[in-house]
Length: 315
Ligand SMILES: [Zn+2]
Image 1 (cartoon, rainbow, N blue to C red):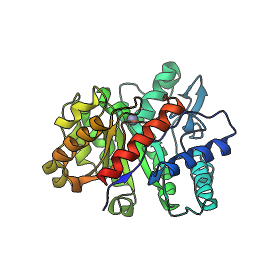
Image 2 (cartoon, helix red, strand yellow):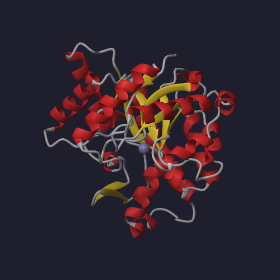
Image 3 (cartoon, rainbow, N blue to C red):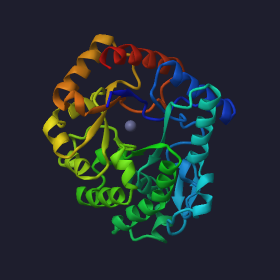
Image 4 (cartoon, rainbow, N blue to C red):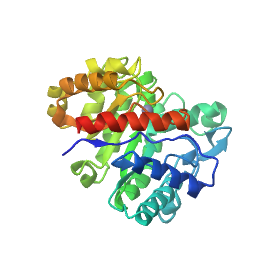
């Protein structure tokens, strides 16, 4: 399969009404030749998108736990914000005559979402969960997210599970292994066979010894990692052609900064090093290290332009 261009998910928030904001983000990605696009996360932040999950309630910029975490009723999953926004993206693509452009839904992973929600209001969390038993919490979030992921895949979306918490070392590796394995084992087999699902972990994988192995051991076929930032560049030491092939994994590689407009030569040099370690045939996507949520729009454009210029020489 050829290497394709994608983005991690978020774009700077537009002040315009949601449907116009999504339109702008779609057009921006089409303009810069992104092959697998997103809705730009224009509606909310990576935590509050999940407020429709039973057991959660908005508090400040986050969500707190106010009951046992459960999955949404099956007949309400189409109303889940990310599903609605995906459908909006598809209809915009259709109106542009670009219905063949692929689109993905980003889902905050069970461990990242659990920790963010549990720590928003610890007292409230303790009324419903034993804090000494994190795995139950992660596992409830897994079960709540799975029907959403399944529905996303069934309507043709690609899915990216975001687990930035893993590179902080806050989740014991044994728990991470179990949760990722259980989560992946419940995914529809076609999503693995057709490489429709990926897992994005920002930051340095190297800083948590053993984490890369845990990611390799899960059934998720594509791992998306950054290589451009000060911490992320350590990830170069962790990846290898042998380990990727042994576990039939492909990489999404953050070969360009998501916050700085970099020099073309620096980006190309970095890409070559990644390719040397991973093997070209094991690279599925090139993308910026992370989302553009905190990057100003003008800079985002310049980064996308630079990304296109360099990627066109690679692909
Ligand atoms: Zn990220």
